[in-house]
Image (tube, rainbow, N blue to C red; front, side, top):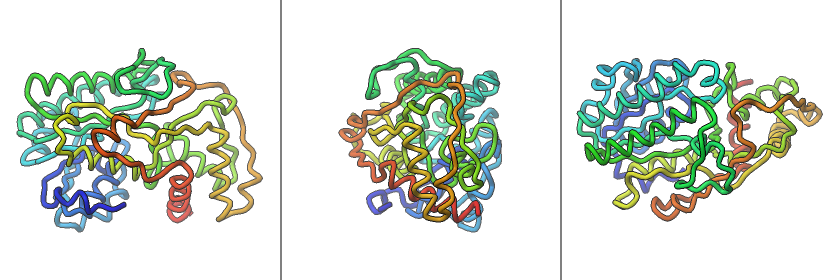
Length: 332
């Protein structure tokens, strides 16, 4: 990714919450490459020390081990920061269904703590991870930012509440915010292990182990799978935009294309078979549809293109190719 256009961030103080996570660590890496001073706040509940290990020797990288559910920790982390990228959250629809209280504590109470701390510290801009789950039961395709339905999971509710709180903190306290509704992000450092692993790293690991991936349903459900480099670009654009009309908005963070699960497994097989030809023969199994899942998801990225000058660099095939190369190098 060409980071030259973001050199305005050099020597800026930027806090990345959840900075040891999949998306957060990629943001930390890009910001350090630009020359920003980066503080990572993480409690390592879902993030991993290995994700930030390469940064620990960098004098411009600071680690605060703490929890966003503790307001004092949030105040400490926000002190002296110019900008905040808030990635810390408990993801996963199934996790929120199994444990709605903890998801709410982290995603709503923790989010509110961060807004309060950002306000008190005089932070210039607060960029936060929103979610495509906010579209809920809306059947309209493509998904357009100002048309949403009813949430279908506790997780979706928490992420919508984030948007409402962010809006109130702008109108009431003049804190500039931008929400990025992530659509099925994938790529390097995404954890393939655990009960709530995302579909792409999970399937990659299973294929590499010659195990049959389980598709929920008949495989016709489709998603706007979004490679991590597109997400990093959106965050950096949100940090640096000088367009006043672009602030205090939410944006779809996606590619603007959809891939069903059968197509996805075919792509994974194609790219993984370059390393292990036997993977082509691994069969797929099917199970029941998962609670809280929507059949199809496809984003309109017109708003981001118009107001933030967003230009996705990775469609699904290129993203899968790069992700597979990373997993093959790091899981074998």
